[in-house]
Image (cartoon, rainbow, N blue to C red; front, side):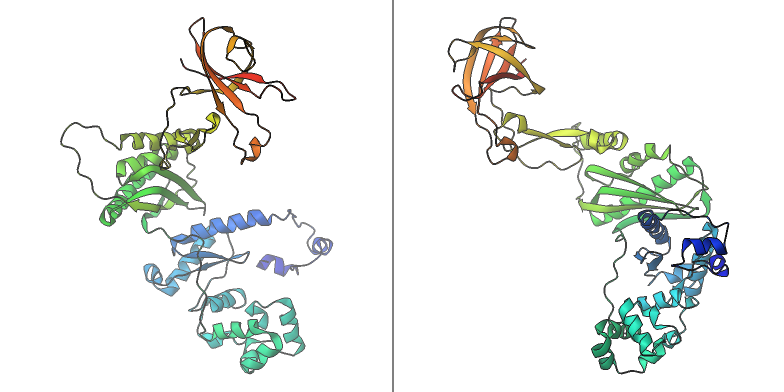
Length: 451
């Protein structure tokens, strides 16, 4: 509810017909709680300009831990004035409060006038609903004639706990200095970060690129001092209209080369919408690993990190899901012996096994063929179908059984593999799937080529 709605005698829970009667020009929109939650999280990210520790409070509030931050804004009063000015520029009504306890700040903002809490006793005239109790407890307090926090403070704490439960007593203890639970921010601040704030917003891509280059240099200096290398980077551009443009990039191996890290974002900044300008830019390295200093070779040896730099640039331009590399899999089924993984992920240790009886590459789909053999279990003498020709040489069979412990292999049939050479010189790898004597006859497929 805002002041304009309250002036029209509107309130939460009012029927739509009654609301239209009070305000015939009322504009009605469908509720979208999921969109509201996403917008509130975006507002929380926007609030990191005042404190790195911001959490979502309910469905319509933010909680900031400003310990050690207020002096950056001219003290507590200056911080509240800065917050008020920022919300006013966005056209959002708000009520900000500052207190030494989270529950006190929440009560002073939602049920009090806001501002700096003068003292814990300033909360006494406020209603008991401010404690955030459940509906049954609040109704019991009203039946007992307890309507303000001051009236609850005068009662014995043990009697309240026996009559109305521990939740009420715990809330009162929190107001009087009891231990608070841990504060869980929306996102823990990165250990390594660099930021630039401008007195006037920057609305040109050239200015943003120059700022990102400086952020990369500052971040890499901090990483070098700590002996760390970045594996994942986050760039946040806080616009004047409250929108935070966030870009993410990863590296295939740890890096603290500022030129390389800047190139990961440079081409993505060209089409970025800057709105009315950016007033704060933050570059973070939320994921880092140890990267000791390396002495470059005195000779003209190839740079071992050149491939990683190329992979990072291709992944940043094309997407990590389009830059892949093969990785061996411990299986005897040929189609599963290799899987494709993002090239930027550290490879898992595992040997590459090469078998001369098998081709290095298989067809994307096995080709069904008809085969003619001298004996049922012998090699084919001729192939017909998508691949056709007379067989002039063959070796095998190599029997490969299905992996019965996989669900997809429960009904699979054993296969006998042959390496065959056709009269036109092609060498193929084909398989007879199934055994003679089964209800279904065997079928032949060509799985790969040796040339």
